[in-house]
Amino acid sequence: MLRDRQSEGGESAVREACGVFGVVAPGRDVAQLTFDGMYALQHRGQESAGMAVSDGHAITVVKDMGLVTTVFDERTIACLPGDLAIGHTRYSTTGASEWRNAQPVFRASGPAGFALGHNGNLTNTADLATQAGMLPGVVTSDSDLMSELLAHAVDQAGPDASGPLGGGPLEAALRSVLPSLRGAFSLVVLDEHRVFGVRDPHGLRPLCLGRLGAADAPEGWVLASESPALDIVGASFVRDVAPGELVVIDAAGPRSEVLWPDGQVEPHLCIFEFVYFARPDSRLYGHEVHGARRRMGELLATQRPVEADMVMGVPESGVPAAEGYARRSGIPYGQGLVKNRYIGRTFITPGQTARAAGVRRKLNPLRENIRGKRIVVVDDSLVRGTTQRAVAAMLREAGAAEVHLRVSSPPLMWPCFYGIDIPDREQLVAASQSVDEIAAQLGVDSLEYLTLENLVAAIDAPGAGFCTACLTGSYPVPVPLPAARGDRAVPASPVGA
Ligand code: SF4
Image (tube, rainbow, N blue to C red; front, side, top):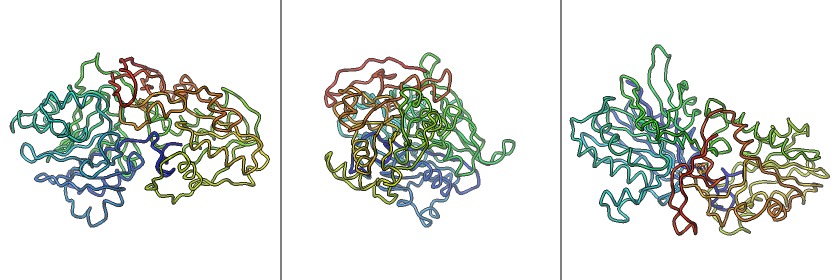
């Protein structure tokens, strides 16, 4: 129950971190398509939205704080002619939530300049800035840093430079800069003639390729963080961009190459994309995410059976797993809570008491469905426990005879350094307490988390690799834990499925 935490009184829990989109459709204005694609990726970031459009001569960037529909309207879109574009929806995990950090970032460099949108988080930002001779504070975000490095590399390469994919000076610059980056990055980059897509060699954040038009007569090509952004613009899913792959798309179509050598490409897609970041209709590792979430519930039901009268999901992210739990256990599925759809996301109230009040503003019990029943409540994750404690109290006040909490992911114990905003260990309830202690603190009769083995089994992608660092502490890319986290340096320790 993480996606809506912003409306729960400003709780800084796990949140998504950016959606990226790119399109090349020769002869067709693409600003409306880009708007639609960004709209489909709104769940990945709601702080700012922006797009960069090229008409082959000049690049125009429009970006601002707010939702996609706040930043763009018909008039804005009509003022953005051009047949190639990139778009970005942002949630800040590094860099302040302010206009100057909104993306795409633009740099005047080479013939016309370029624009860049980033999903992820670099782990060697400070080293890169130092190596490049930048003074502290000069760059304010990863995208800012990458664009500075690229601009410098474009200038160094010169206007006649290019790479084997025919991507001009920007391709040459990407080839020189990308190998120095560490961490998570799914990038879309645009110059006046091309859109580039890049995925880091661990493939920590998703990126997929789609096609507009028929396979034998393509009318354009699309890059997107998640496949629903392809659906909404009428593009067919072609494939995931591979970890370590650079894709160059121009009027002639896409060309690509894996830039990192074999030994450095180790797929570790963020396992929490499956648990709750990605939309349920997204396709990852060949499956629709909703099916994986339902299977998580099914396996959860087998782990610790309980006698009960009704299974319910915490709206809305706990619902698919609750459906799976009900199906496997044979306990009827029912609705126990109604969610206020109009709750504002800007509702900021610090502190646990205020957060609990925020939960009550958002969720209200269906008393006749609950009264006298033994209830299994399924949620997708447990961070501080604020939501679950408030929900348990609400259900008991509504007359529930018993409340059994089931969580469709393992205990969250470690912070994320790859672009997801997970609180420090001190705030992660599972980092310091046993399952029984947490159950007592939440006021539930029993508590069970899905095991990591069952989570991987539910995803059903044999041989696929996952990042599970926030569950296991095994970070696929080495991360220096800063003193602010109150922790030690963590060595690299890849975890695969
Ligand atoms: S640490 Fe957790 S949230 Fe971050 S990328 Fe890895 S699995 Fe995803």
